[in-house]
Length: 245
Image (cartoon, rainbow, N blue to C red; front, side, top):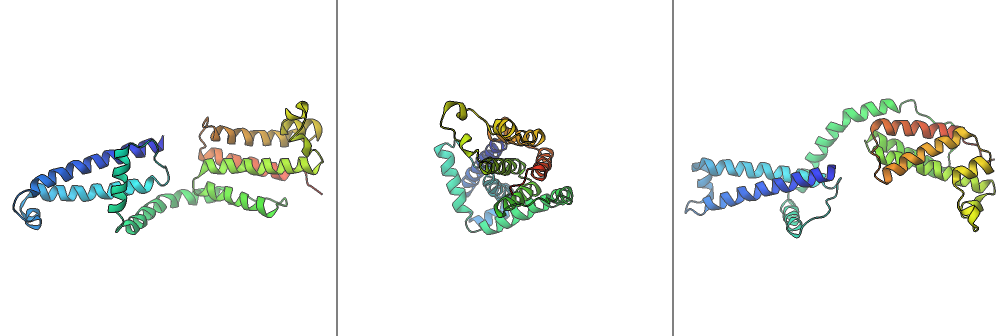
């Protein structure tokens, strides 16, 4: 997993940094002042440069952990993280700016291609403000590369629309049925066998729901192709969905 890769790399860099600092401390035990050591001892100068480079890499990895939170940490690892968080306070803003510049530079070309993919996307059906907002978030998630979030939000719209339609048709009691027979009725069952809804619409609803369930239960990982297919599926679902007059 991405989180495990970041965790392993981060603490390996911290281990390397600690070793270099110990080696530098050994050299610093001489009577020479540090500025003079830097000028006269090539090994010490090299270690200084290595330590600064490693510190930059550690700070960069720590920023990456904000996207992939670290879990299952040992007390010593937590102590290390707190130390580096505090030691980078003065340069944090610069590190964040550098980090974002690099990320946005990498994302820019990918985002341009995704914007081309959604260029012709449009929905002609009426959507209430909340649903329209969620649909906008779906597109944003896709453009920024949050494919799993995009897929899961697709289900949020299809499920909300379907439940509201069931309630609109006076069958809301079947969703929270009080007797055993009603309790086992799924949304698909109600749509097909009670409301006689178009099978294609129910099929789209099921496909959207299954994909989101697999993502939420870690059975599946959404790719860019999955996300764009889910958005197209959702668009078809919305356009074909019966109106509430």
